[in-house]
Amino acid sequence: MKIAQEKNAGRNAFTGYGEGYVEVNGERIHASVVVSADRVITDWPAASVESLGPDHLAAIVAMRPEIVLLGTGAVFTFPEPRKLAPLHSAGIGVEVMDTAAACRTYNILIGEGRSVVAALVV
Image 1 (cartoon, rainbow, N blue to C red):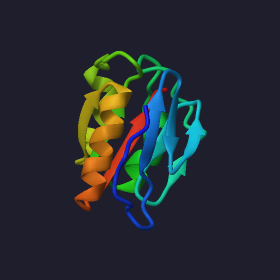
Image 2: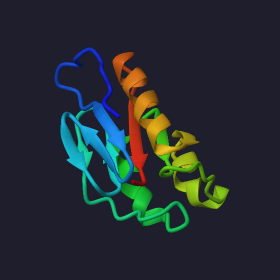
Image 3: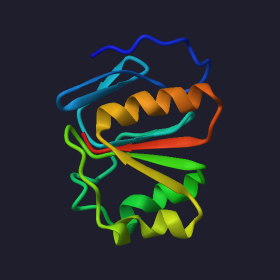
Image 4: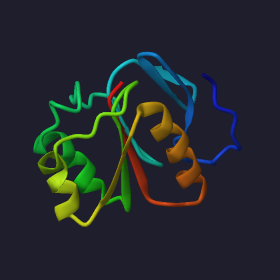
C-alpha cells in the first residue's frame, strides 16, 4: 500500500508498506528496520518479537526518543514485558502494534514534530 502525505522536509517518513517490506522515502526495505526523523538503521537484527533482547534496543535507547512504536509484523504480537524493560528504564514510552499501524502512526507523530522512533519487524 502506498501512503500519500505532505512532505516533511528533511525527515524520514514511510511512503509505503506491504507484505514483507516497508518503504522509507521511496526506498523499499525487506528486513527489520529502525526509523527516526533523521536516521534509518537497515541492519537491525531483530528477526521477530520473540527474539528481541537488550542488544536490539540499545541503539534505540541511545537515540533518546520520547516514544517507540514497535511494529510486530503483519500480526500484532505483544512481547514479554521484560523484553521492553530497557526502554521503560530509560523513560521511553512504548506502543506495540502491527507494522502497518506503526508506519501510519509514525507518520502522524513525525508530522506533529514529536520525537518518535519506529522499530519494525518486517
